[in-house]
Image 1 (cartoon, helix red, strand yellow):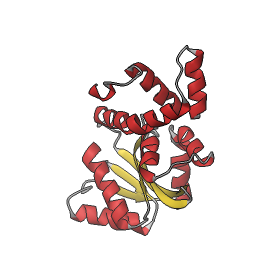
Image 2 (cartoon, rainbow, N blue to C red):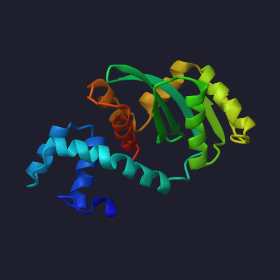
Image 3 (tube, rainbow, N blue to C red):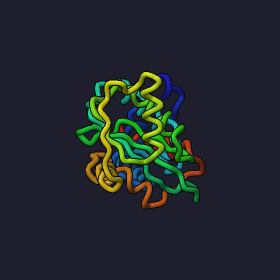
Image 4 (cartoon, helix red, strand yellow):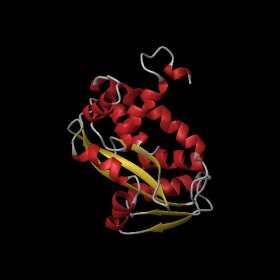
Length: 203
């Protein structure tokens, strides 16, 4: 990987540090201390830069290797605060509870839902079954996508909002790593770094 050329630390160290932070819900200081115990001195702010720089890259590699996703999807959106502002987090999981993709948007409308759902189907192909709640934005986006030739062979099911919310945030196998970033109030100066950090939890 040429992405690591010229870095002070070797690729393996960077990947382990980013993996510790994102996969095991550790703080930057925790990761720094773990590396120090192994004889590697890395300042927490350096790990912050690594997460922002390589999180999305590793996630994109994961997506390319996992295009054959299970074809039963659950899709919903919830809202979280980023830098004091409410944003909407779209998330899709498969039948096994693995995250297919996420997207953080400042708006909750059919266009945001449309772009997210279109990216999903272009990445993984059409699901056999798509389950959503009855949010108007999702229903409108799906109708528009079907009119444009997407999800034409997909069976659509709707459930009450609270049920799908439980699926996404409790049943999902990646829900545990996600929540600390929301609950602990990690400081993100803008949306893109937050998006990259959230994406990496899929890896």
